[in-house]
Image (cartoon, rainbow, N blue to C red; front, side, top):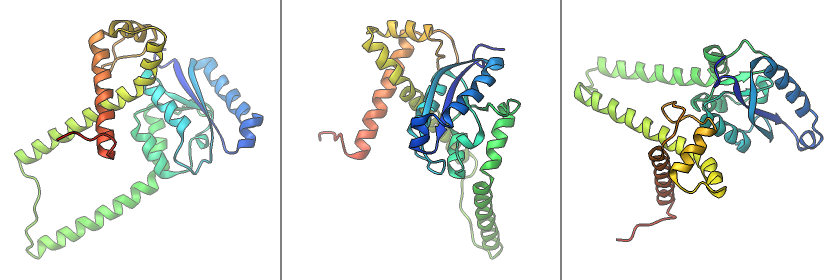
Length: 246
């Protein structure tokens, strides 16, 4: 068993404030997860949410996903219904890049686990597919009538693909920097002032770099800090908080 896979972020959810205060439901989830971990590894962080399963705004789950991305480890939940009953939310969860494990279904993991989540989001995918099919049929009918249809050709398609790939990489780097900032701020408040000191601390915490390496350098830390600062500035400008002086 590899060191990365043997570490998990645990996420617990209860539907009512009463359950959250009393521990009812939460205790059962922790027990189920604990039984799973006896054979599979250990929890490095856990997050508890008191929220309806139909709502998609889950602050604790967002924190859990960020922690899982930072440490490059899966999230473990007691049961699949502890995540959500919302198809749209499941789709966003699939896009988060985090592996999810279900303690009550230990055999469901990796590609099989993603397939399970994908099937739960099948209704939304089906609807999108039907819309796409109708659009293609309309375009085919227009072409048959002699209407000239535009679109990318040759080098234009290649250029568009490269641009799309660049955007994906930039968004991934910005998300990574955003996820790492709470950890970096905590380390700075505890005395790690230089980039080299932060790099040593991240290495000691076994947080992998963006390329999956186990050792950080001061240059890599500086790059993360610049990316995080750049993302904040762009967000402020887009909302009108920060304005450049002409």
